[in-house]
Image (tube, rainbow, N blue to C red):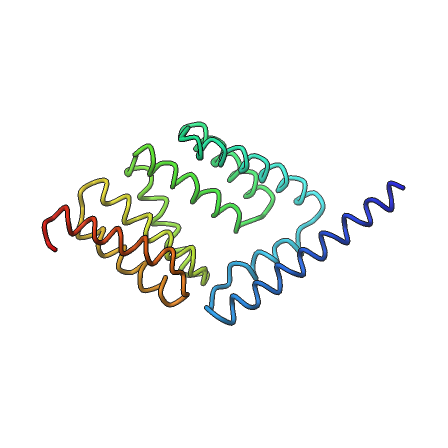
Length: 193
């Protein structure tokens, strides 16, 4: 009975992995974003020991998101950082980057732009180099948010503009709207409208 249950779970996991792989192939073909296909490869190549650590890290991420959604920034930052360490320990570079980005978003909400800027500066370079276009656009917009917190509106407009270009290329309409909203807000603040 235990063997059959385990066999069923493995079949479900393999079916989900196949769906993620298919979604990754579509995403790569349609908008040249490699994140999901790389994520599927990372799941497929993970050892059983790595999977255990990643499951712990994902549980921590879920708790961290709970704190984030309740505007409890410091506990969220702490858990995102701990989950990032576990993902790194398991060799999961993609989810390591994802956890780091969430810690950065938490710093933006504190607000602590001094802590957020180096995170998103580094992540934007990594995301661009790896071809993770959606995360690249989001990290640029986060940089815009961070520098706006320091009243650096010309830099804010530059980052939001770059994010908008990428967002439009990958047809991410939600992020495009966020970029336009950020640009409009900055222009209103500086009186250039």
